[in-house]
Image (tube, rainbow, N blue to C red; front, side, top):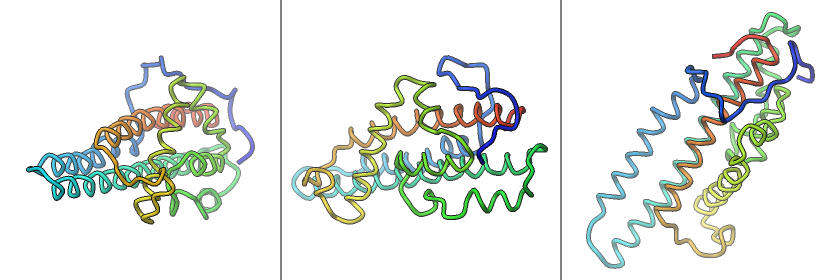
Length: 210
């Protein structure tokens, strides 16, 4: 969609705290995904003892944690995109039939089969006319560093899935602290994405999406 439907384009701000509602996607990320990720934390703490056996088990849990984290963030990102598409499809000013719009904006969507890396996110949200990372970075100066960490997480997801450690420097060792830092990054980005997409849709349609 190449045109704006209503008013000047708005950029969200990290300093804005006046909105209490959030997307269904963010609510699911904070509740459902959070529960699943906490279960991995419990599994990690349950590994006791010393020696090579424990080290190997811990490494496998850390690998599983990283893969689950990336897949849960993919689900969040895909859900947020679908929520935005559904909102645009029901906007009164939209010229196309809602069903047709949904098909055009979701057919071949990268988040349906690919990692939630910065390139895939930017490509999919561009389908709704949103210069995605421009909005994210303009709203929060910390977003650029978080974008790099998200890329790192997905490099590890690919390395683990394909057992190809060249993607991560040739060493399969992964510390729990690193995965926890990625989780913190994803949580921060989820809130940022929610606010940025909200601001964009508000500027396009002229009413709040959630």
